[in-house]
Structures are given as structure tokens and as C-alpha cells.
Image (cartoon, rainbow, N blue to C red; front, side, top):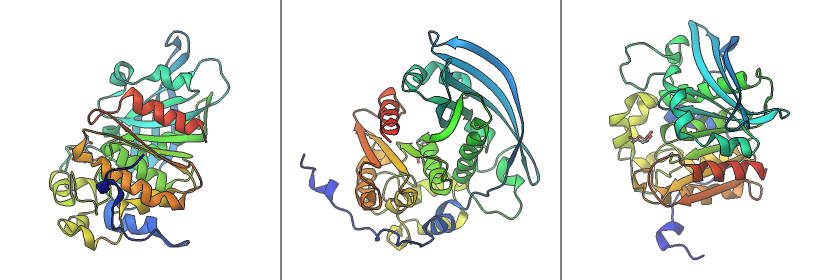
Length: 320
Ligand code: GTR
């Protein structure tokens, strides 16, 4: 297929040289570094419903306590796992509107049929999505760290993997980090920092996700740092309208995950997330990956995490 001219062009920095600390550059420039700490000290099963989804899945709710240097984070997680199977690889994915809403809106039956368990938590149990939160999140529990909320949500994905490792019938080998939009940005930052993720999947992740800064379309640094100053390190805002001065661009973030696998999904009408910029980042990152280890999928429609997106990610993960 011949792509339109604008889909073929991007002037971007070269891919990271072997041994360079590109993840450190992204930490310093954009996200802040996600601290390693946070120990899962308690995991209590609160409820268990076997045979949901027409008998295909078990549904488990846990309360997890994660000890951090200055206090605990408490997470109420929801897990669906294939019924009666051996250990299923897990998709960890944060949700926007609470666990119960995902039961209405996410295609759990599709994930279970693909052989995956799915583990989720409300992202604001990790860090409030607010520049001046009423109650602090995990960032306040680590002294002397500068990290934005995206990095805090990435930390949460890593802790979900710790939790998955303690749930019978759920396997962390082959784990997938999945996220939509701001949580797709978090999934990429988790995948870049934690090599337990075999697959990193970002849907509609846009600016500071999979989209190239140097492809001038959709959301830019000025817009994102004005509306969401708490997502990144404060110094990142200085690059507003100076995208070309950035020491990094997002194809390098994708490349930093290689040789582990990456799936980028976009929607045609999601202009704010710049699907062309996402595609160009994938194309520019491709030389860092083994064959078929980075995938791109574009569907019709707008900014959302739909069954088609899940299907692509699950098929991609199963091909690994
Ligand atoms: C938008 C934001 C995007 C994206 C989106 C979302 O308002 O500009 O970067 O993260 O929110 O998370 O839905």
C-alpha cells in the first residue's frame, strides 16, 4: 500500500545508540523516574465469583496494601481469569471510572477467549488526576523524587504486576501493559522501565505517548503542560513551542522497549492524538526491533478503547 506523502516523512533524532541511557533522558526531560520501591505487604481476597461470562471466567476482587517509604497505598483490584485453566498470562490495565464500570464496557469475554487474565484498578487510587489534589497520592509517599502523575500511574502498573504474581491461575510471564490515552502514556513509560512486561500496548496515547513531538499535529507540549501540569516534571513545560530542542522524541521511547514487543493502536478521527505522528514513531523505531515485534493498528472512529483495539493487542500478544 502506498501511504500518503505526509505519512512517510518525519525528521527525528537518530535511534538510541547501544548502551545509551535513553530511559534516563526521558525521565529527566518528561516523566521523572519511577522509583523502584513499594512493597506489596498484604493481599486480601474480598470476593470471588466463579463461572462468570457464561462460565468462562472467575472474577476476583482483592485489596492490596503496598508499603512505600512514607506510608501505604491501598488498591482495590478486579481480576478476571480464565476458569479452570492453568496459569494465564495477564493484561494489566488501569481504568478511568472504577472497576465496576469496566464490567459493563470492556470486552472481558474476548480477553478470556484469547487466553488472558485481566487485572485492573481505578487509576486515581494510585495518584489523583489533579494539579492540586485534595488528598495526595503515591508521589507524596516517596521523599526526594520528582515525578509526574504519568510516572505514578506507570508505577501502579508495575505494582499490578506484583499483585498478579500472587494470584493463583494468573501468570506474569508474557504480561501485557495496556493503557488508553493518558493511561497509554503511562503504559509506555511502565514498559520502558520494567522489563517484566513482555508486551507494551498503548491506545490513542498521543502527545507524550506514541506520537512524535516533531510531527506538528494534534496536541502539543504547550497544550498538554497548560492543561495537565501535574502529569510531567515541571521543567518539561519549557519545551512548549520548542519541540525541536527536545533531546528526545517518542520513537526513541518505543525503541527503548525493544527487543520486548510493542503494539500501538490509533483511530482515524482521533486528530488530537495524532495517529500519523504515532505511525511515524513506529516506523522510525522499527529498526530497533526484531521482525514483527512492533505493530501498528489504525481503525476507523474516534478516541476510545474499543473491542477492536483489544482484539488487535491480544492477537499481537499471542503471536509473540
Ligand atoms: C486529553 C489529553 C490527552 C489524552 C486524553 C485522555 O484531554 O489532552 O493527552 O491523554 O485527555 O487521557 O483521554
